[in-house]
Length: 471
Ligand SMILES: NC(=O)c1ccc[n+]([C@@H]2O[C@H](COP(=O)([O-])OP(=O)(O)OC[C@H]3O[C@@H](n4cnc5c(N)ncnc54)[C@H](O)[C@@H]3O)[C@@H](O)[C@H]2O)c1
Image 1 (cartoon, rainbow, N blue to C red):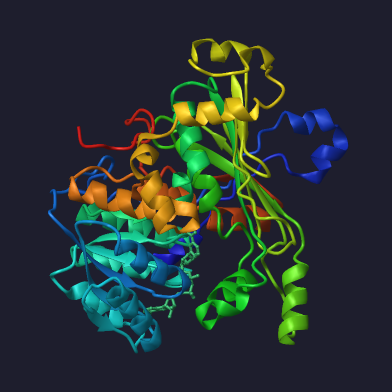
Image 2 (tube, rainbow, N blue to C red):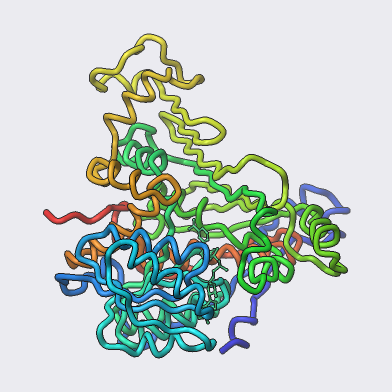
């Protein structure tokens, strides 16, 4: 099977240098076809999981795997979510399990079953029949294997980002979710951020006209964190892989804005990177390592084109001394939104005629940000129903300002009520495929690479991205 995915059909025409020498116009008329990776056939009798609904539950019983920096805070957040029961905790390290047990006892909850000490202790936990949901927050290399095993043992799964790293893993996860008809959600928290979700609501209400371009990124210098990842897994991955290895925080919100696999689909990408400098220097100077061939570029840029003629730009830089940024820009025919370095909206004057109670109406132009008062009024008016319900509690519980709690809460709300989850396995596949596909583009002089349709033919069935609510 592995071999299957290594067969990449390179169909690049018009790159020949002699063509370019003859006359540039001659070569310009030839078409460059994207590199295509293999899409496996959907196994006979297997159904897609678009809009998947599973039976309602009175309580969601949860088992956690991976209790490091991220997983331990998830355990804490779950102590605030009604109708959940934490059943078991698992980590390689006993000390990390004990730390999370203390989180439970501090919250006046009983200690729970624990698994630790061996590489595959988590399998025993997945075999229990009193768990509904396996929540995974381990390193990237373990995610796919754990999700697949858990689904095969009758569990729904939620997995930290990026949930899968290779095309083989992604297709195996998609196939397992379809075969078992279990929920498989990637824990992408940034789609619940207050600015992102409000802006999505504004976009869905037509405030920006037709959204043509979205931008997102993960720009976060990780120098102070490198030493804290268990077994140095994150540095190790960056050492060995070129490409955007952490694209989901930027791509998730962009795909929701553009209704990806709900009326549009990403067709192909091209990627470019700059040479790695800061991390190899860090390894040499701080760790005394002899740095050989460090693969991950200092700054990786990806451009994506969609079936409906929209574009996305995604960036990754965990090396440079830049302020944290997820970029997050939305450009539509009637408006614009920007999150970093400051939040703002620009709207074409006519869009605002029907907005009630908004000050400063006369001062608007399509070319400058609306005033601070106007922005506040817009954000209040277009506050997403999810935020209306949860903002106050989310800010108290915390987790990246509240968005992490909202993500967990929504996951449980949808499971309890038998509703489709906010993010399905095809979102997971689409947002994770940038890692392997940008690597292919970069290794081929930034050649275009086709983005598979992970729904295998169903990308245009659902119309528009929606959150499900109990009626
Ligand atoms: N969504 C976000 O905002 C966000 C933020 C930080 C990290 N993350 C993601 O969370 C995940 C975990 O990151 P982290 O920073 O907590 O890393 P970490 O190294 O602190 O934690 C990983 C944990 O997994 C455990 N583990 C590894 N193999 C295991 C196995 N076989 N069985 C049981 N436990 C095992 C390790 O012992 C460790 O405690 C990563 O996917 C990361 O990208 C997401």
